[in-house]
Structure formats: C-alpha cells, structure tokens
Length: 447
Image (tube, rainbow, N blue to C red; front, side, top):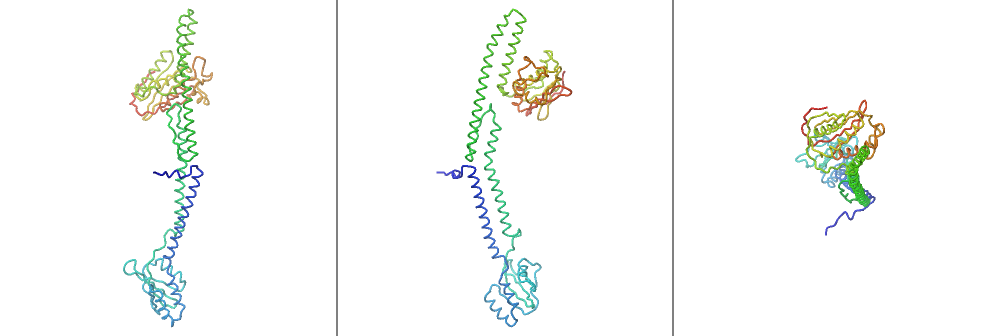
C-alpha cells in the first residue's frame, strides 16, 4: 500500500504557512546547536595549551634553586610536553614563520616573555619544539602537537549566521513558489479563457482555498461557454430563419407594377438581407470556417479595389503585384472589403497600401473623409456602434458591424487592427499580420 505524504500536510494556506514557520525554527535551532557544539570542540582543541602557559609562569616565579625539583614534577605531570629548562643561553633557532599558535602563547604569557618555534622535524604532524624565554633569560622548552588554525571566515558564529541566512532564504523561495504557483495557474487560466474556444479544466490542486477557487472558476467558465453558445445558436437560428421570408418578399416584390415602389421594396429587402448576413458573420466571432492556405494577398486586394472602382468609387492600390502568404482567404477578404467599403462611404478617394516585411505585413486603407474622434476609435470597433454624423452615417449606410467583423477576423489571424488619423484629414485603417510563411513580393502598382 502506497502512502501519500501530502495527505498528512495541512490543507489550508494558514496551516501550510504555520508549518513552514515551524520547520524554519527547527532548522535554525538545529544549525545553531550544531555550530555551538562544533565551536566547543574547536575551542577544546584549537586554543594554545594551558599547561605550557601555566608551567612557564610558575617557573618564572620560582627561585632558581627550586626550579630543578619543579621541572621534575612537571615532567611527571605532563609527560607529553617533555619540558626542559636551561638556566640561560640562546633559545632554539626560530623558524621563518610565526604561526598562530606561537603568537597565542606569547599573548597569553604577557610582556617580558618571548616565544619561538624550532623547525619541525619529519612530517607536518610531528611535534614541534616550542621555546619560551623567561624574564630572567632562562629558557623552557616543550614539545607540542600541531593544531589547526581557526577558520579564516571568523569562527563558528559567522559561519552559523551565513548558513542560517542562506537556508532561510532558500526555504522562503521554495515556500513562495509552492504557495504562489496555484495562484499563477489560476490567473493564467482566467486570462486565457475564450468563450468560443476549447475549455481546458484548471487543475484543482494545492491548499483547500486554491482548490475551491479553481473549482469555482471551472464551473464559471463552463457556464459562460454554455451561455455564449446558447445565445449564438439562438441568434444564428433567428437570423437564418429570416432568410426565408426575405426571399419570399423579394419574389413578391418583383410583381409590383409601380417601378418606383418595386425599387424601394427591393432596396429595403436587400438592406435586410445584408443585415442578416452581417449578423451571421458577427456571431461566428471571426473564427475561420476554412483551413489556412497559401493565397496571393496582393491579387486579392487589387481585385477588391477593382470591384469598388467598377461601382464608381475612386479606389486605388499601391503595393507589390504579387505576394503569397498563408491565411484564411474568405475571412481576410471580408475584413479588407469591410474596411474599403467603410472608407468609400465616408471619403471621396481611397488608397489601399500593401507592404511586407521579414516577419509581418500590413494593409493600410486610407480615406480623405472627416475621420473619427480619438475617444471614439475603440468604441467604433464594437458591434452595432455607428459613427457620428460627421462621417455621414444613415439608416442604409451600415449596421455598425463592419469594423467589429474586420477586427475579429484580424485577431483570428493573430494580427491587430489600428485606426490612425490621416493628415490633413481622413482615417487610416491598418491591418498588421504576423507572417510565418511569406513569399517574395513582386513590386509594382496600379492606380
């Protein structure tokens, strides 16, 4: 039977934070205790031997007549030192370096004493001969086993502080990552949610609060998707069903004898049919129904310009004669047509400029009309929002869906749609598309 360790951990964030604090205190306590223990061991082995310091002071304070007996007693008490006394004379030749042990013995003895060290014989672990010159020039020698120097970083206290600081830092980073990772997943899932796309369930892991929030988000996303799909199906069904009575009315209108009335009726029915078509396109949200294929975007744009020119509009094209890109042809054609139609209704002259770069291409539709107020540009790209009177909108000129349909199609291609003021007057509607696969443009132009 496999035991899940996570089942023993607290479920709530407060409990996990408390567990982290307790674990931190335990780690710090263990580190400090270990450091103090090691410090005592270091103190016990690394300080200069008290025996030699005490013996040198005792001999220095003893009269010369009694020193021989005292040295016999000291040799019996401290055989490892093998102490020797010389009444006078030079101390053994010192080595070229005075290590920390010699300096510490001299510091503990105080002024009037001089400590030297004879060169060690044999290996580095062999005992060293230490000579202490007393204040009356007598010399006491003893053999001391080499001891390691104290740590260069300042001893066990500094080491403990550094270790605790590093440990707590890494523990804090780990705790922050463990507790914030579910929140990051939560924010990413909320930002990436698209009602018309596939809904991938957010993993319901982590503390109880995070699991409850993830469960609520999953349910909310499912409800929103169901609501949007239901609304879309209903409106699409209504719009589709309106085609049948519109077709019937058009057929009956053909039998109206009065030519003026017949023309007005047919115009109204055409207007209604165009509105139904626009609503159906809008309800798809710009999502392509066709696969992406390689198309000659330059030829498509020129064809659109020629169609508007044939209807009496002054529409020109500037750009390469041919440019192959990978796109959804029908959706992109509808977006460009909507922009050109919008520009032709509000301006006297329209120019469509096509330009290609190494990683992106742009289609700019320029008109010389009154333009759009800066504060209204974002609102104009929303569904069913019409321009003000300055752009000459009327009941038959549009439904407020052209820009929103174009924007949805461009976004579906991973691009952007910008509305830019044109100097001295007019508007530039610029489509920018990232191009993963793009042919070499053949430059030319026509007006």
